[in-house]
Amino acid sequence: MCLVLGIALICTIMLLLLWVIWFFKQWHYIDVILEMYQNKDGFKTAITDSTIDVQETRESKLIYDIQQILSRAAWTESEALRGKQKVTELLSDLSHQLKTPLANIILDIEVLESDMADMDENQKQEFLFHAKAQATTMQWLIQCLLKASRLEDGVVQFQAEDANIKHTIAQATSAVYAQASKKNIEICVTNIDNILLYHNPKWTAEAIANVLENAIKYSPEKSQITISMDKMDIYTKITIQDQGPGIPETEYNKIFQRFYRGKHSNTVHGTGLGLYLAQLIMQKEQGYITVDSKLNCGSRFNFFLLNPKSFTFES
Image (cartoon, rainbow, N blue to C red; front, side, top):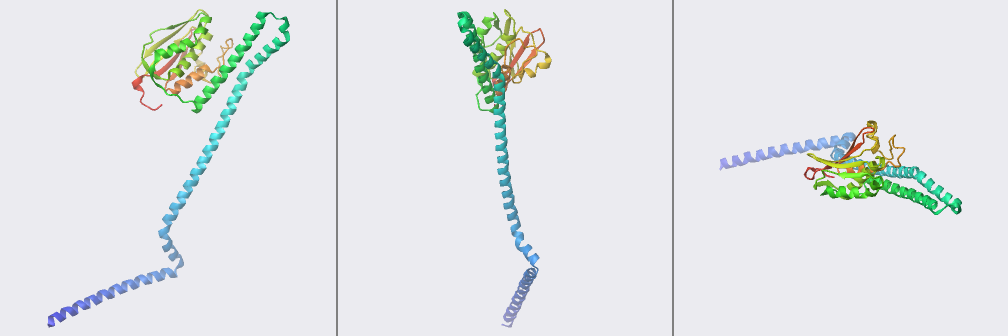
């Protein structure tokens, strides 16, 4: 009995000691809190430490949102200025290029009005034909400028595909057949295989026709223009070779610029848009165009179109 009472007493004393230790520990925590409360700066720091990260996160998000809004506003303003500049350039180009044919049309009409009574039928037809030719030039010029501008800005989108290149070349040569016949120029198509190449038939035919028109303009009468093909690993090269006056090497890059006309082209009517438009079309199809020429030795324009299975990146 005494042993049981002794054990119970010892357990009671140990529980009392544990309670005392717990009490003094809690009392210590209370002292620390009171001390922090008396020190206002320390208390403020202790209270706000848990919310600093949240506040910083909110502020960072707000700053990020403001930066995004400002960035969008700046981009919109930049696009608006760019669009305005493009319109201004287009109007400037149009006014400059249309000035000469429009003046010629007005002059033809004035001559017809003032001297019609003294003219025979052939003379009247000649002035009318000249005025019509100038109006056609104006129409073609406006269409080319609009096409080029839309291609540059991505307004006009066209899909390239694996299409028959022989049909495309036939379409291009048909478009310039009348011009070539008028100068007795023979367009000779050699070594053109009936194969598929990655291109858009309609737009590529227009690009090739533009180069053919240039070749016809600058080639002498009764000469020959040759179209040939050379298949390579990644690209297939289509070459248009003429017997014209040639192009100096210093102008190789310039001739693909908008409205640029070579120093030796003053005697031939042109606008300087055909090659520029052809280059834009080739770029849209992930192809390219080059020139190889020497003065008095003719010119070779090379179109490089992707072979079907070599097209591995997005257009």
